[in-house]
Each structure stands twice: as C-alpha cells, then as structure tokens.
Image (cartoon, rainbow, N blue to C red):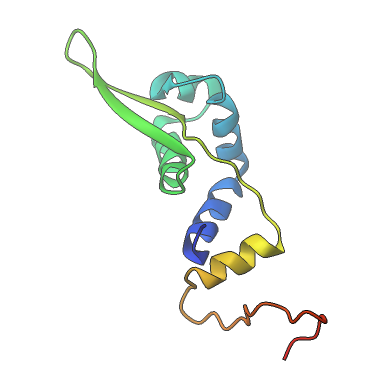
Length: 116
C-alpha cells in the first residue's frame, strides 16, 4: 500500500505527456539513454529530468554499465508496476501516512451507510 506522499509522487510522474511517452518507449525492454532521447526527439538533460521523476516514483529503473572501451553507459527500463486508482486507493494512502495539513476523515463507513 502506498502512503499519500507516494501516491502523489506516482500521480505527478504520470501526469505529463513526455513521461507517458517515455513509459511507452520502454515497454519492450531497456534502452540506452542516448537512444531513448533520439527516439523521443528530446535533449538528454530534459530526458534525465523526466526519468528522474519516473525513477523516484518507482516506475522506471536506471542502471549504469561500463562498455568494453570503458565508457559509462546508462540504460533505463520499466520497473514492475500496476497502477489502479479509485476512491479506496486514495483513502488507503491517506490512512498509510498523509502529508502535513491533510484533514480527511478516513474512518470505515458504518454498516448502515451512515458516517458519524
């Protein structure tokens, strides 16, 4: 279960069309960052900014490898995730830890449907 902070991080990560395109490009497996930038028509600094948000949300994973000639090569791939959003997901996230200032009643509803 996610906390509210983690849920907000994931929602922020997927709330951008460039990041959605990155996820789509990575669906078939890991890709070198320069190749990914070419496929997306995006500068590497901008791509790294988006990849950082996706990585912090746990949606992608980066791995640094050394090539045979000693160059550092950064690859990214999708991390396993299954994102479902509904009212119960949000309430559970609030129960698991809310951001400062959240003042939301997360009590279970009473059996007859009334809440106190």
